[in-house]
Image 1 (cartoon, helix red, strand yellow):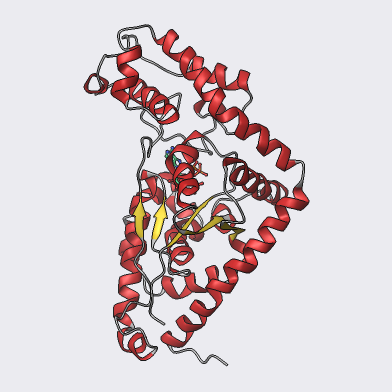
Image 2: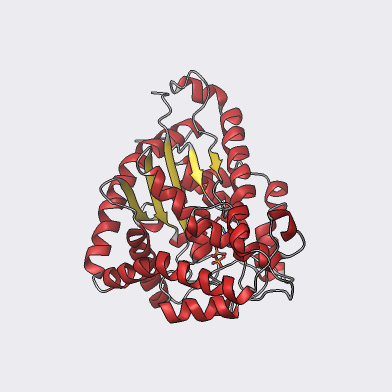
Length: 346
Ligand code: AQP
């Protein structure tokens, strides 16, 4: 009963087009882990509405993000692919975990501070408690590994703290339920690895590449066509110095650092190797090479995404079947959670 199965859970928000940061920071690991782990990949639509979304746009974005998942190489025969709102256990467990988490813990979340901006009183309660729902998403499947970008590290630490506190608060009930080691909720391990765990904006090397940046020039979307990719790379902000010949020369040069990191990640090479080839030369030469590389890597993903977007019935079926499989895992865990906290389960 208390066996812990190695299990991966992660998700992306349908708040716009997926971009190179989502791809290099998380997706690349998601794809590889399909062959070594049981994987559950979610389109986190409930997280999306922490900021108001137009309902028609949201519905389309859920299908678009799912199409992008499939186009990147997530395989519904290997992984469970579904959207969060179709599995009600996420919301139910989030309520219980919200009663375990402390306000002081949430007050320390830097992403809330960034997203809420100056007028925190006007932010939604959902935006504030978002990390609790994220914890429920993960621990509700007793997932052990969570592949994410660097920006999610703090939320993952919080998820571990919540799981540990739940296990302590309900230690006797957990043992009585048959979990001899006292671990009912499994503290998840963040899996933050790869050459580009934090991809920065093409317009400002100090800001994260993000779906919600108002400037489309700040990111490479997975659906951008070849001309658009080339134009965005050419327009990417750089400084006036030529590229250095070794990685240490990138210190204090955020834009050069970002672009060489992107090149290295896409080419599967080290930054030093990239600089050995392009260091000392003009940015324009390097940018042309980067544009060609990005078109070669992202072009096929964009084409396949568009093909799948034209077949919404198939994409909906993937989500429906994935939701059923996800529910089959989450429902018994939720039932145990209800019993452990003392609810009457009939
Ligand atoms: N710039 C990035 N570099 C590396 N990884 C990134 N991720 C996001 N941006 C970068 C990783 O992608 C996964 C999904 O992220 P998300 O959709 O849940 O939301 P987010 O982290 O808030 O990403 P965005 O693009 O910035 O969305 P908006 O603008 O809507 O807030 C996560 O694993 C994340 O780490």
